[in-house]
Length: 210
Image 1: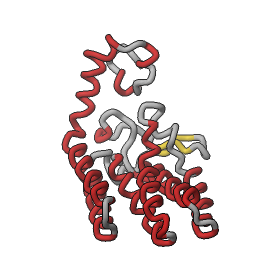
Image 2: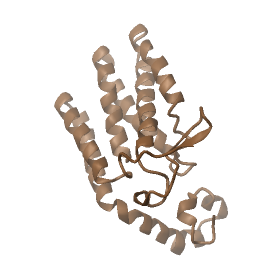
Image 3: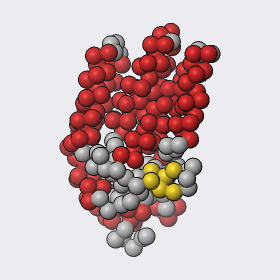
């Protein structure tokens, strides 16, 4: 699923925590939002393996949440919400598409790497691919629910996420062609080998790389 969806879900997960410790509500909401984003920082470094931990993030989140009640401080609240967002992000990606360049073609059997099992988990494709219409629908439903519950400056964050999600959905199917064109006509000729080594293989196939 796309990043705005994950960020909004992370924000939603933090609401119960913010209600338990209202004095740390802002920290909880921000940490949840960021937790939904963090796993996708591995986009160009072995995506959905380097920072996606469906089992370990989930166990860590379960262990961290009780500390919000027992020791309600800014660090414990932030840690719990960050882990909740990251855990649910990692699990949600199992129900999306695979890692292929054009995930709507459904050719990949890799969704998320489970470090506990030491294997890739297959995509369920309940949401066919990141940026699919149903992905945008999920973002909108979560965003509307958040706008009903929350007020203040965080509403601008929610609306901004929906705007980004809408634009991404509109251009999603064009992005693979743009990316491969850039790689084939510009990056391969101009970038040093050590930088090209960081470019995901799916963008380099057909250009003499594997």
